[in-house]
Image 1 (tube, rainbow, N blue to C red):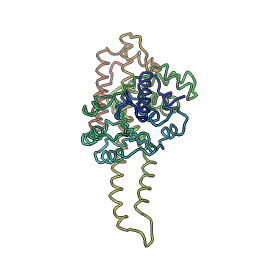
Image 2: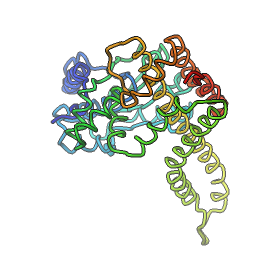
Image 3: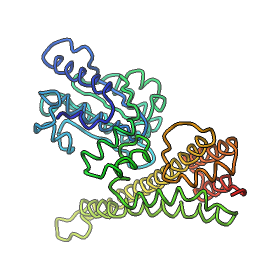
Image 4: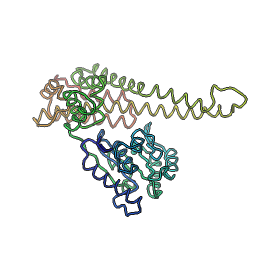
Amino acid sequence: MTVFDDLVGQDRAVAVLQRAAAAGAEALAGGRGAGMTHAWLFTGPPGAGRTAAAQAFAAALLCPSGGCGHCELCHQVAVGSHPDVETVRPQGLSYGVKETRELVLRAAGAPTLGRWRVILFEDAQRATEAAANALLKAIEEPPPRTVWLLCAPSPDDMMITIRSRCRVVTLRTPSTEAVAHVLATRENVSAELAAFAALAAQGNVVRARRLALDDEVRRRREAVLSLPRSLTGLGPCVDAAERLVKTSAEDAEEATTRLNESETTELRKIYGEGSTGKGLNKGLVRGGAGAIKDLEDRQKSRATRVKRDSLDSALLDLASFYRDVLAVQFGAGVELSTADRRPDLDALARASTPEDTLRRIDAIMLCRERLAANVNPQMALEAMTISLWNPRL
């Protein structure tokens, strides 16, 4: 059992990372360390395990045994408590230059335990242009023991000057069988449920795990996939768009309310709000107002991101549904990720042409683009649902 065992279907990437970790150990011992570099870019489709691969590599670099998976150092990296590993998770829509400059300063410090200082940057594509330029300078002139692990969907999502200075590790979409095996053996779910979740998630291990373990996630997917048959007129199209917006808002509230409250309470304590006594610095209390305003802005940005992610997940489910409709229309012998909706697939396949289906897929993709460009969600979704309406059903 090693730190790489949780990477499903990524044998080629694991081999590269294991060789690099061995080269890193050789470099620490005074050798050449060929194959080890100071900047890495982990890319791959959603759910392929970009962050998991980067975290496993971090553990392999810091572990004297190359990532044994059972020592104290490996455990610390896994739970996020290792002093030499800093994980950056952009909470809002973007990651700013001020935050990046502070990160670069921290990255310049020497390792606490004498091996490597590792910066694991999730969703690095969210860095603004100014932030990316600040990051570029740090990657161009790195301290000798600092390693940057950047994660992004594809190399093209990063500035060309950054990706040209990184070694790219490309993760692939795991097979349905591999994901189902992991769910059945490690999550202790039935073989039938594991197979359903793996197929529905299309290789996204994180989503497959949620589908297998959370009844609410399965219910919401069912509601999204029932939407095409419900679009019987202009009114139902508007209602369907409103339901999607409402569901995304509920997801955001559920994910952020408790966290927002704890963050705000902690910040107010730091600035002495509610405290009394002669030693209280009233100027500090008044100065906390600006910090609280900054926190509220970040929390709003985080909530917006959660809403967008929720809507995007629903839109991807819809796109998968219409992709399966197209497969049925052409008689393609491929896996249908929405095979549990086979009667609906057959009905839409009979009631439309492949050209109609392609136009509907284009409408879904256009809606995703509009949401990413800050178009009002209700308006963007209404335009999409009207385009999906099939009068022949």
